[in-house]
Length: 224
Image (tube, rainbow, N blue to C red; front, side):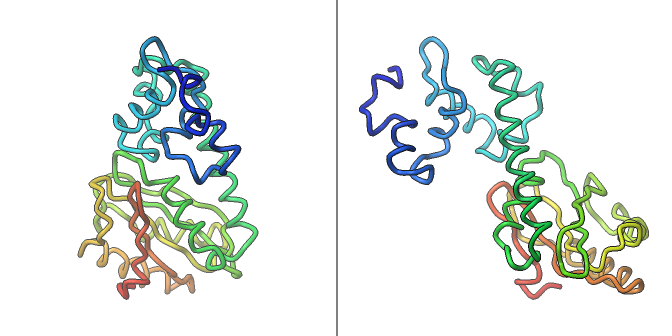
């Protein structure tokens, strides 16, 4: 069935205009971006197929160009639009975090980290470097691979904090497994970095464990 053959209140565009974007599911929002499907599969069905293949929106938007290129019906223009939407979202959240104190927008921090790290297939350790007013200076991805005290070098984190004149930091890393529960290794690494940064008067405010669906604060869990 073509989207134009659906009842008017079930068509993504009409539904969005009448009820707002929050009324649409992920596949419906994707259908608006895709606009068209392919023979035997409308844009809504193609959107749902993409979500299932890549494990949701976060996985889709972090999918590699080669992985997207392999999808029938997803040509260069549509791939470019998906990448552009993600980049616009990142830039909007970056601007918000640079203009406001980090803790004035805690949900924005979680969304930002999920966009940056949530859909990655491998583990990444990143640091949000903050100024004296807790505004974002920059987020940097410093290490990749299995995170242990031997693979994340405190000296490098300290040097970057000094180079950026950061007053504090928020640590973050993703769990590709999908579990946001901090491990014992995560706790040990956090305390090691906290001690190293304290030597140069840089505070560790939090450490987030990120998945495609959530970002868990170790500070809120009393683990910092």
